[in-house]
Figure 1 (tube, helix red, strand yellow):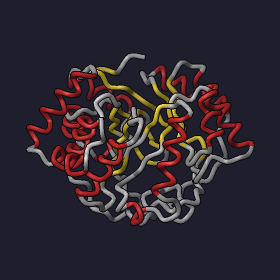
Figure 2 (tube, rainbow, N blue to C red):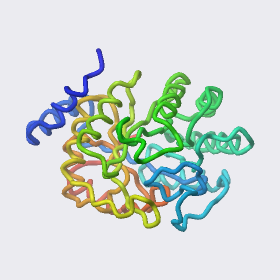
Figure 3 (cartoon, rainbow, N blue to C red):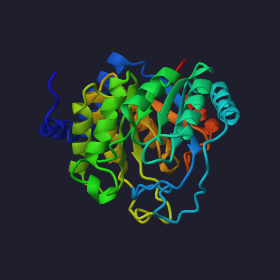
Figure 4 (cartoon, rainbow, N blue to C red):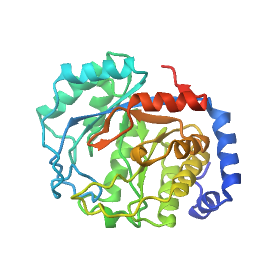
Length: 313
């Protein structure tokens, strides 16, 4: 099927909210168990010092945020993290490294060792290491990497207001390489950057036009971090988050739509509404890279209250 036009995406996004949620839930139930939520864990396996100037990111070397610069974590430490995550109910383990691009030296070999170790636990393995070459994408796949995350962040038009050190085309090229290597494309964006509603529509239209479509779509709410240029941005309007998730669910019916960063500032009621809109994955653990995240016990209690459950392996 041809990709939907931006006008068509806008028409979905701007439906009356009851109609939008009804359609999103109908699509969701046709492709997913509406009571099941995939639990994921994200590990920061190499922290800080990134040369990119992403205005939201506390790991950028351009800003003073107090984030420590570290090397790649040891295999034993990451494997232990993965085993704890699995014991807590996670079925997907994601590893992030603060690089502009995956390095062409021994550090990339260290990451491949991490991938092999985590894959050995039986968990799905996802990495986010910045831009990749074709050879690096194939090597990750061969090591056992299930998916690769590379977000578009926002619309093509607003992108330059947030990042100047990497182009939108750079991001699209890496996404293409991930797909060509046979990994699942994990690609989403961040809301609350100061973008307009039209920018949110533009992001969704771009995601829906990817070929193949992403099978994993993280929807993040900006976590405002002191020292970054976006620290004083106003909070995201909650219903814009719900509309974005519902529209993503309709446009990408088979994808896991992941309610990702920013959940510590979301009420239980807002998170429940996001599940109703079609979100079916969350991240467990006290941190998402360097920003706060709800405790696993809080997440499990919320799911139990809603009569929902963690997705089985």
